[in-house]
Image: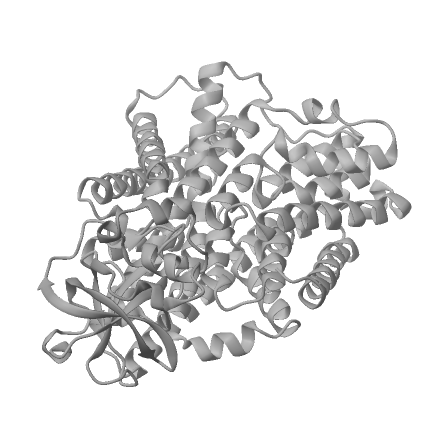
Length: 265
Length: 337
């Protein structure tokens, strides 16, 4: 009799602990799912990954919400009749059924992305994240890029077109209309800057900075990292000891950060 | 008792890694000349970028593993394996396509396979190859790297290394030399299931979802710690330092292989961490990370220790490590990517 009682107490304590733990897990899964929904709905997703893979985040949101909802459903449904009257067997079956609880340390680690994602305002990579910036695209232009109206070409399109050219002077006098962020380094020549963008093929882990060199007498008036729309004409010149087409700026317009801050190669 | 000790060791290792990561982050943020707020914001973007891209694959992996756990028995797998030794070993390398398990799901499956009397070589090959040679990892590696040397190299090298190690075991080992007595016990007539019963579809699905939820936490922590480390490195370590380590054909392989062992990131998502290193590190070293990591790391070593004898655990670490290292260094020295 005594023995059976102490089993009952153990069973109760074990059950209560498992319940708290199970609630924490289910709520965390739901919260993570809601975070994904929020990132998608707020339009912040392009700050993190290539638009091409946005559907993966929809999948993640759906699965997380499903797992969280399932966890809560399991907690709320009426308790099933015990498999056996024997308390030892009940304890064993409860253990099997519930799996082992997840430690609080693990729960804290899994909550870390949520904390980071909700407390720190979402921002795309900008001028302060540039460790090295390139003036040439990895790949050369394909036919499609040549067919784009020169005024519609973005930073990446232009660099690709340059890449497939053997004589840059053929671009002298071509007009361009580009969007990017202001990027300067102390080593740049006087009045020189770059109209810079990050390219992202998968997610920001592979982000690399590219820029079209430009020349403008009022370069210093625009803050580093400010998003700008620049119009001008290309003229071959010297930039960082290379001969490159340099955009001779005619007008600069300060703009808001675009909805899609990265270019997708 | 032993399981408790292992659990404690695992928790300890995890906490040390987590604390080390946090300490490094704070030390560098406080020590760096840049504005701490800006650095934190850049870190958050880089961290969440990898996490958001990787989370769907982690979830798909855990769902698959939950479904297998709930519905597939070791008999189903054993039935697919040919009798011939070499044929069976090679089949073992591809079984992951039917049963997509990551490195944490694979150990329990292999244990049950051994209990069913499957040849050693098949089990070992399956153990080493399945975490990579499966559809979820195929897609995640493709998303990260596209079709190219990394995607192809990862699969070819993994299969080569797994089959070679499997064949070495085929030559020598009998189950009683390799497995711990406890793993063998059920074969002698014991039973591990206290309440064995056949699951209905609804019960099975419910169990699969619960297992997937649990595994999301078990695996998610490694992903999150690994991601924090990669994001910290990208945010704070200068390109020059990375290039100095990453351009050497031999040192880069050693660094990435060591990192793969320590980080213990799930094979479904390790591509996204590798991506963070791909700019500065040799392609051979990226391959070493993606081939060796899924086979052997801290968490799989702990799981190996649960079913194999000590000497065998050592072989299972050293053989894949050496083979991967040789292949990767050879590729770095002889192949232009």
